[in-house]
Length: 94
Image (cartoon, rainbow, N blue to C red; front, side, top):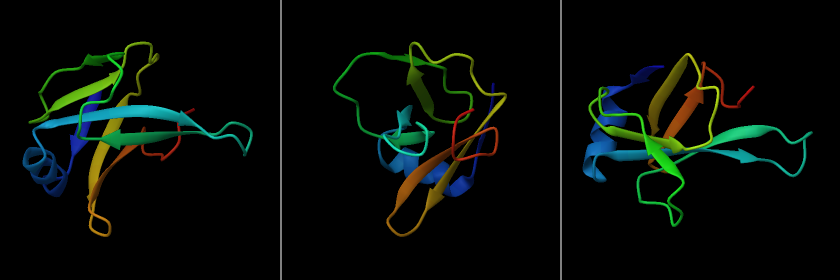
């Protein structure tokens, strides 16, 4: 999996501890559309695996997440200041 992260995202992740957790949320509506959720604090459950720190930060995804995307894009937004992840360029998961 290729991880593409903007410089702004790398700075924000570094400011918040150097780790980012990406998970998949399934919506109750819209046919169960699955979107990505990110956080920089440790989740309460331990069901995450590390994909390493080749991108300049440590990336964690759910242990049962398969298949992985070809590309995971990480970006930062200003208002509110947050990290966003995109699966193969999309905000949702196929």
